Image 1 (tube, helix red, strand yellow):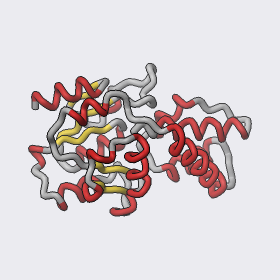
Image 2 (cartoon, one colour):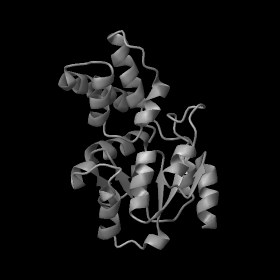
Image 3 (cartoon, one colour):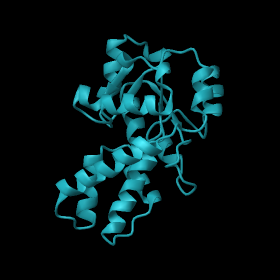
Image 4 (cartoon, helix red, strand yellow):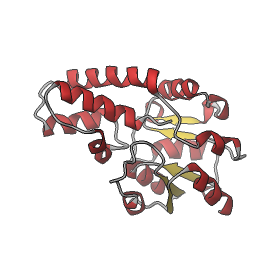
Length: 206
């Protein structure tokens, strides 16, 4: 789901209300991090003393956007319809939020709820590998037969730490034209593709 851009939008709106200029594309440097980590860093950067209120306000804005504006990443439906692989989700979000998002955009039928590994289930966020390792262990996945798709450097690092091949994807709206896919390669991605059509072609070759 295309959720990263919604958090960026919430940040831009909140900071604009404080007369702080912060464009959505600037959020790319924080992509993949837990929101509470981003709040801490931005609080220091912009000298915002009340981190708790900052966090609560951002979450309220982000949740509203998530409920009303969430969309799939372009091309994901075709990708899901044309792959027969077992599918899993390893995310820094909470499980309830993940399920809500999948249902909101109508792709929940492609995923089994037991195949979701989330921050609240492991207690450690990416770049720690725990959300992925939990899936590897619980489903007894073969590393050589597994591929992790990631759209952030932090997520890529987490995937690489499990000794699994990671393919970077830059199809999300948070990948603006000025953002280089080199950051995913530098984080250890095996290859980077720009859309789900190319992802499907690459996976079928591997």
